[in-house]
Amino acid sequence: SQQGEEDPQALSIQEGENATMNCSYKTSINNLQWYRQNSGRGLVHLILIRSNEREKHSGRLRVTLDTSKKSSSLLITASRAADTASYFCATAGNYQLIWGAGTKLIIKP
Amino acid sequence: GAVVSQHPSWVICKSGTSVKIECRSLDFQATTMFWYRQFPKQSLMLMATSNEGSKATYEQGVEKDKFLINHASLTLSTLTVTSAHPEDSSFYICSAQNLGLTNYGYTFGSGTRLTVV
Image 1 (cartoon, chains in turn cyan, orange):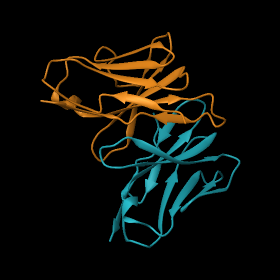
Image 2 (cartoon, helix red, strand yellow; image 1 turned 45 degrees about the horizontal axis):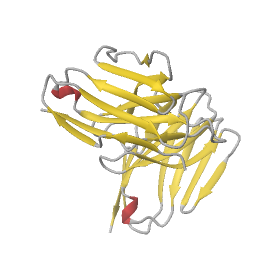
Image 3 (cartoon, chains in turn cyan, yellow; image 1 turned 90 degrees about the vertical axis):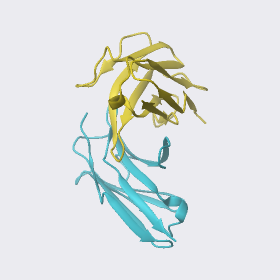
Image 4 (cartoon, helix red, strand yellow; image 1 turned 180 degrees about the vertical axis):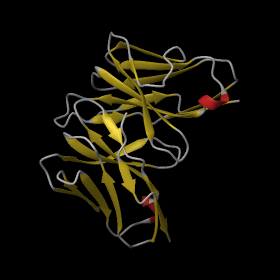
């Protein structure tokens, strides 16, 4: 299956700072989803944004979607040590999820 | 909320043996389930898509005879890694599409870490 691209591949910031991750994709989508994965664990769904939405908030998370540029960003504000994880975007077409390569986020205390 | 139970969470097996991984949707019917594999530090790779009552659709490069998928009921799909070898060691995750959700959301299992020694 086709994969999207995420950048940066890795991000290390101080606790309390904001973290921004980007995702680009290639095909038309119904929605785009962001997931978090702690090391060796299953994925946790964070937020879903539909193709007709431009921005969505959930707690400290803010997701934007630009379908003209086929890109999305995930912003985590006031980061915490517990936010250390890998973050993946996934685009939903008709049927499957197409995954980005992920961004490894490290929050330094 | 929708829950997918994946079992076992980890397994260590000897080379040449077979391992079965189960994925159950606990409170919804999953007509479609997806099986993914993740190598260390890499993204998930879709292995196959299984529909209840029919043969699974495998992604290019995935050996059908090695990774047997059975989706016999609306709440259970299994992945059997046959004649496992060390290169099959990986993290396997299933997900089920929940058509009952307004966003046709996907619910993931917690994953199975397979180590073949």
